Image (cartoon, rainbow, N blue to C red):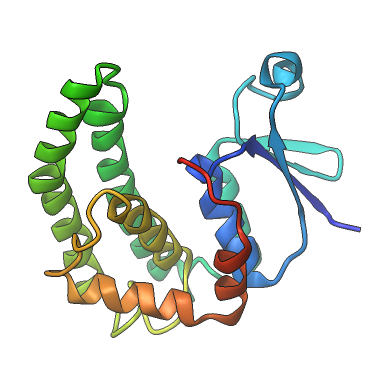
Length: 203
């Protein structure tokens, strides 16, 4: 019997980092992908997704969930300082994600979205990736963004770069440290199996 029920839409989105953490830890859980959101919205503690049910507790907020799981399964860094370093990298990834959401995702006109995406990939994405790589080089070692073992910041880097590379496959050509981190993540047996079998979704 699984101890966790993770609720989100049928997409990677804000729940994927928690799915990756659980995959890395080899923890079984119920991956509940909501298709009747208006009808079940009242079940969510803040009427938003994702949230995770742990026994009788419902825990909201995607980063709160991910941080809890990372700490629970020793993927948050080996000490408090490493944990802070991982948080700093994740927050820098969030800055990049927020920029994409505001400058590209929210645009409804397809022609305008295409122009905005091209500008984003050549400007904001490069700046954001440089910031992430800078921290990873300072805080980590080859293949790891913090210290010398896998942590949730590595998983977050993998997810955000995966999403960006769906728009431009060679986006990481100038980012050796980020490419090494992706290789480390994908060489983990549990994550490799998860990535191989996860549903293909548009986001």
